[in-house]
Image 1 (cartoon, helix red, strand yellow):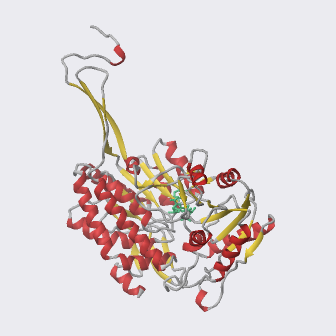
Image 2 (tube, rainbow, N blue to C red):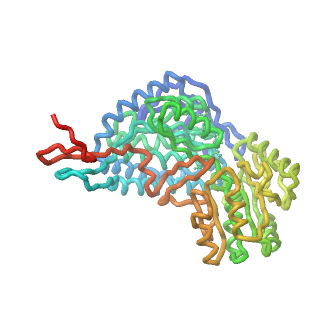
Image 3 (cartoon, helix red, strand yellow):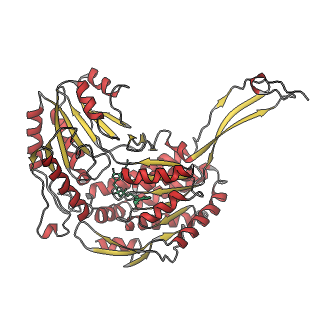
Length: 509
Ligand code: NAD
C-alpha cells in the first residue's frame, strides 16, 4: 500500500528535495534518510539543498515575486482554489503517507489534509477581502487611506508533527497576499513535503504560475538558518520548539526582518466542580494521547477541583486502561508511535525526572517491545500526580505524559494554568457561567487559545492560531493573520489647489 502511494507521488529510493515549483534541482547537499516510526523501515533518501542550491532557489523566488505580485489577488486565489481541489483528490494518499512517515493515526493524517483543504477555501475567499481602511484627513481636499501590499519571499520552517498542514496555513495565505514561498520542511518528514510539491506542481503548470512562487528546500537545521539570516527573505515563519524559535528570532531581529513564531505549548484543562465529567473525559484523553502527545496543543496538565479530583482521576485511569497502542494505520488503535528513538529517550527522561521531583505515577509509562513495536518508538501514555512548580512540569515534553494536580479556588486554578513559560492553548470544563466568563476575561487565561467545554487541541482554521510568551506570539491561519504576510502602506492624496502642511505648520517661500 505504501509503495503505491510513493509511486503516486513519484517518490523513488533517491529523491531531490529541492524544487522551484515545477523544476526539481539537482540537489547536492546532505543526504537525509527517511524512516517510518510505524515499523522502523527505511523508506527513501532525500538529498538536501546545498548552499549553492539555496542561492538558486532564492534568486528564482525573488524574480518570481516581481511577476506574481502583479497578478490580481482573486486570480492568485483561483490558483489556490485549484490546489484545494488537487488536495481533495489526493486526500487519502497524502493522509496515509503523513500517517506512515510521521506516525499519527490515519484519522489524524486525513484530518491534517482536510485542514489544508479548509485553509485553501479560506484563502480563496480572502483573496477578495484584503481590505484596508480609509481615514478622514485633517486637511481640506485631501483623502487618506491604507492599502496592503505583498511583502516578498516568505520563508516557512516547519516541524515534524504537522508535516504538511503548517506549510499550507502559511503558503495559501502568503500566495493570495502576493508573496512567494520557500518551504524548509522538517528533516524528519521530507517525503510528505515532496508529495505536496508534486500535488501542487500540476496546478502551477496548468496556470503558468512563475517558477519560484512555490519552492521546496529540504534540509537540516542549516537550511533554516540560511533563511533566518537572509535579508532577501523579509518574513520567516517558523514552527517548532522554543529553542529553535529563540535562535531564529534573534537572527531575524538582528537584520530587522519579521518573524512569525509558532512554538511550544504546555496546555492545561481546568476541570471545575461544575464540569460535566463524562464529556470532560473525552476532551482530556483525546487531548493528552492524540498524536501520541506530539501536538503543540496536546493537553499536558489537568488542574482538577479537589471535590471531583478522586472521581475524575479514577475515570482517567480506567480510560487509559482501554487505550489501544499500535500501528496508527490500523484504525482500531488510539495511540501510535513517537517520531523516533530520541523522542522515546526524552519521554523516559521526563518520567524519571517527575519521580525524582516527588511526583506520583497514576498510570505507569514504559516503552513497548515485541514484533508490533519493532521500531522501538511505541510508548505507553502515562499519568503522574505532580506540583506545577516541578521543573519538568514547566517544560514541554513532546510525548504522552499527562500531569494532574488539585485546586481549591478558581483564582488558584487560573494561576496554575498561567504559571508556565508557554502560552498556547487552554480550556475550562464547567457548566458555571461565572467561571467560564472569568476564565475568558482579561484576568483569566493568558493563552492565545482559550476554550470552554472543549479540549486544548483541534483548532479550526477560521480563528487565528498561535500563543503568547514562549509560544512566540505569532498568529497563523484565520481571522486577520493574513496581515503578517503583507506590508501596510498609508496613502494621502491631495486633490485641492493648495499644499497645506499637517499639524498646521506654515512654510512660506
Ligand atoms: P524543532 O524545533 O526541532 O524543528 C522545527 C524546524 O526548525 C525543523 O525544520 C528544523 O530543521 C528547524 N530548525 C531547528 N533549529 C533551527 C535553527 N536554529 N534555525 C532555523 N531552523 C531551525 O521542532 P520539532 O521537534 O520538529 O517539532 C516539535 C516542536 O514544534 C514542539 O515544541 C511543538 O510544540 C512545536 N510546534 C508548535 C506549533 C505551533 O503552532 N505553536 C505547531 C507544531 C509544532
